[in-house]
Length: 191
Image 1 (cartoon, rainbow, N blue to C red):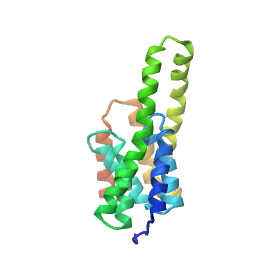
Image 2 (image 1 turned 135 degrees about the vertical axis):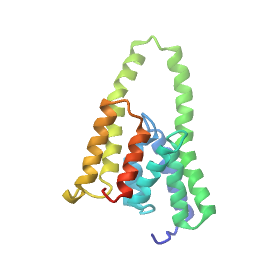
Image 3 (image 1 turned 90 degrees about the horizontal axis):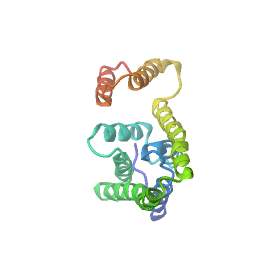
Image 4 (image 1 turned 90 degrees about the vertical axis):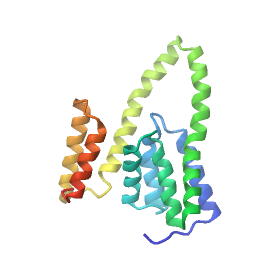
């Protein structure tokens, strides 16, 4: 990828986008990945599809909180814009943007909901959020599965995606084994 040119307004747009996604991240930051893809890859072209997918895959395989994929995306945007200093800036803006508003909101609402946990409305809200989280996770999976297009020629990738989804759903096999298997299949050139 050719280096991208980013002005102060672009860095501000990156921060503002992640700040706004922070408040939409019901179920975790990973549920906002489809909009991150739209913004970073399709609209701004600051990342490529492989960089986007690799950012998520690497961060999910690494120990620690899964929100770290946002830092890796910011890092990659910064690397594409220059060097290590811009990479550190991109990382700080993306991770800080996704963490700050949601952390403050969760802290405040958890204190309130704990005090009011016996209210029917609080219980109903918690139960009503479950389908929304599932739908957002399915949308994230769709973005990752279709990163290389919808072509029938990509049937091995679709098959691996389908089998992985079934294995995750029906077994207790740890996800890292499936990531490892996917890495081996990719290394062998099968997907």
